[in-house]
Length: 266
Image 1 (cartoon, one colour):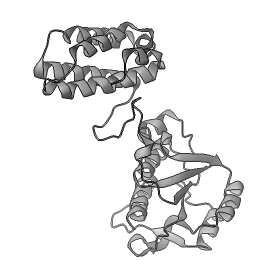
Image 2 (cartoon, one colour; image 1 turned 90 degrees about the vertical axis):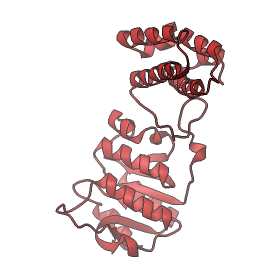
Image 3 (tube, helix red, strand yellow; image 1 turned 180 degrees about the vertical axis):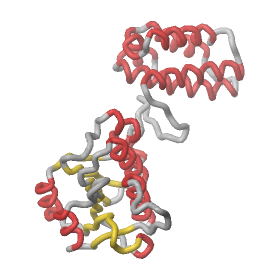
């Protein structure tokens, strides 16, 4: 476990995030009576630190201090619940939450070294919604995307809504913002098979995915730009997803996730 001295050297949010992870770990240990009370007490001693004061609002700190006082008097399941209450309170203060199945490094960040990375590249063509940008990054992390190019005009990767839906994956998938003309030049230099996720193309189940290649995903309203669509049609063409509902198209992030999974498993 990371030492208290080391925790005191971390940045404010990093320290709080790491402590949240440690309390989650101690909750699991408390259920087996394998927790370390001295360590729990030392962690609780950080609640008055400048790092915690910088991150938590006054009411959050009040609740945290109340929970901290309980750590020394409860045991068993009650101790586990208290540790988990602290865990989620800290995540709430950070504006995030976690999943038990995430791969986390020692600082509480997603561990990018655990990713399987394929020779698959995405070009996001003027996708305007930060929610969609973040969701695509999350799927890209899961399905082996090597890099994402964002054509200028896409929503910002560091927008709060993109960060919320990406769940940390904007930090695990390499990306670059680039102009359309520069992207077309980059595609020529890469010399990889290119296809567009667009209506009017080959159905996903019949599409011959390349082992190495580039997929272009167009904007929510206008789809793939003429220049990028032309470059795609000069290569592998269009890939389309069969639908059987009343809508003419899927949400772009949903469609991108379906396509990426199909490419990943091809």
